[in-house]
Image (cartoon, rainbow, N blue to C red; front, side, top):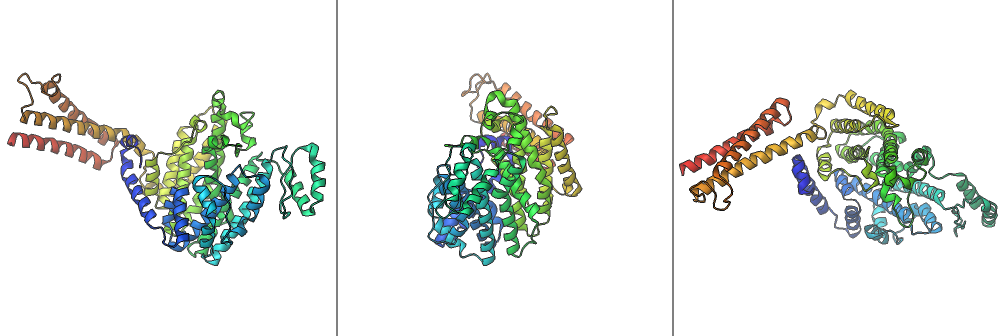
Length: 534
């Protein structure tokens, strides 16, 4: 659960955090009894607790399919992410991964911690996969095949200039050698193996690294846009939703992936033994000579400008995401899709214009995450959250930023879409307005509690003869009774003043102010009555 300090600063987080804790425990108890399914769901909890919680919104049949879909792609991603695997070993595995999922005995040891366990026991995932309906299997196989090929393509773009060209034993792929001086040797060597291998090499050589925004879009499509397409097809296969277009399904994945790439800059750039660079050169080269230079303190101004450029680029997908979510009919599927999207726009709001992205990982506080999970139930909630977070983003835009006009234009378009939906008056904001209430809530709570405790201490001391004749407390000789009584009175008066001001300017909910004022007054009156009656 959230830290005590965070809860005291944001007291409205307490109830959603408690509900989130209960939901997590409930999800953990829903793990099936069959060994292979038990492994899949327990592994889902270990590699992604948030996804394991969100997936509980779905019905059993669809939930099983999405669980396996997620684990298969997570395993594929583990192979791609492991920089210790040689390229000539990694690429063939990625390309053939869609066939491995049909093999109950296949596994490949790679990755670390929980991901290593997933890969070592991947046969359990395959066993569960083979129990899914044929329609679900076909979708998972198709997306895995396309994603594996896309990952392999981009790995070949990243191969260093001095790496040699090695033909894979089955002739399926060949790694890319970029040193122009060895190009002829490379081609002659490949011709000796197979004409198809030669064509693969020529194609790879002609493809640049993630240089342009187009390359960036393509990479995000392979690793996340295809997930969006796959989920849309799984929803359709379940018979619960119409098939969404590939375009807006792709945007759903791209928006989440771009958010992760922005947030995870430092983790990716510090990857050992080799940095992982996903930010496109077309963007970062406007600010620094090397992508890794953004984390240097002397480049902090340029780094933030580059960051803002990246955030602005991601906002182009919001309109498609809102269209996709507004078309969903089944409540469980809607919540499953909507919660991550709201968290993505919230994360972008936290990251924008924030130098801490280059110093660590910037995340929303756990209490706000809990509120999003708790309150995202309808389309009105989604439009409201996107509107509020876009307002938060807008308030952080520096007019001197080189992309300020473009950023503001994108945010105003999002706000216009949200307002035209007609949904903003159907929900209560928990993002913007409550942020303004926190200090007032805390002040009222602390002051009212303080006055009550002081009064109680004063009365108990008097009843138990703990006050000297000159009005000092035996336990605290330096404190005079008049001082304590004055402090109690001041706290009480100040509490009522804050409550009155809060009612006048609507800084606090009416229910809270009424309970605070009446509760404080009645409690003090009761204590005084008991004292004098006794």
